[in-house]
Amino acid sequence: MANVFAITNQKGGVGKTTTCVNLAASLVATRRKVLLIDLDPQGNATMGSGVDKHSCEYSVCDLLLGEAELDQVRVKANPAGYDLLPANSDLTTAEVQLLQLDGAHFRLKKVLSDLKDSYDYILIDCPPSLNMLTVNALTASDGVIIPVQCEYYALEGLSSLTETIQHIQETVNPDLSIEGLLRTMYDPRNSLTRDVSQQLIEHFGDKVYGTVIPRNVRLAEAPSHGMPVLMYDGKSKGSLAYLALASELVRKSGQAA
Ligand SMILES: Nc1ncnc2c1ncn2[C@@H]1O[C@H](COP(=O)(O)OP(=O)(O)O)[C@@H](O)[C@H]1O
Ligand SMILES: [Mg+2]
Image 1 (cartoon, rainbow, N blue to C red):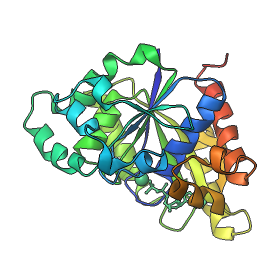
Image 2: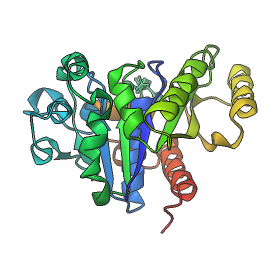
Image 3: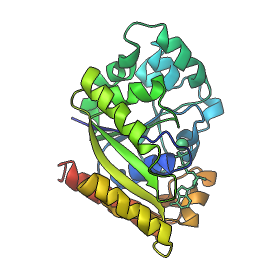
């Protein structure tokens, strides 16, 4: 039975998509079966997985709206080896259309109910807002992974995110928990990084992953080649960091082989 994790933070540019794509590839490298769901209309996780968002006949939008079958939508991310439910700008309209459907919160959960037995991990890349797509992700998930860039305003948005998580727990998904906070674009020479990092640990304790993701140019370059950094430059610091994160996650989520 898969662990389902939403990678979310309503701030843009904190490393959600980078984490999804590279964690998915790293989990495959540890022989886990992985599904990545792109739930951001920008389709960055789709493109970063080597799938052209413009040429997808069907996308995750069609699944949410019940207008396509799973096997029409699901594609393989090559060379990384995980499965992908791609997204493109169609998802923008889905957000509005969803609200007119019964059980709008539960559409993704319903899609996943048929899929959970086929994977070890399902990762969901969320859009940079707390909208109906994100609510669908949180409703369908067991845990939330929150990438945090250790900069001045990093902590500001976290309280509204934790309030949203709490609200989802109290209403539609009592089992939802914070799986972990991930420090991204980490620069230990920068005193602000160290201060914010310290505050995160004070607030969230051992929910903060021991693994940190350094700022690494290879991580920024890999998406333009349509592949995770593990395939683009497997020896880079970014690649090693995401492999370490995958090991930590496997240990914590109790799926060690
Ligand atoms: N650890 C990192 N080192 C260097 N660049 C990074 C790192 N993580 C993300 N980036 C770059 O920062 C930008 C934002 O990252 P992204 O993962 O798209 O964030 P989000 O999905 O939260 O908006 C992208 O251009 C990405 O390539
Ligand atoms: Mg993104």
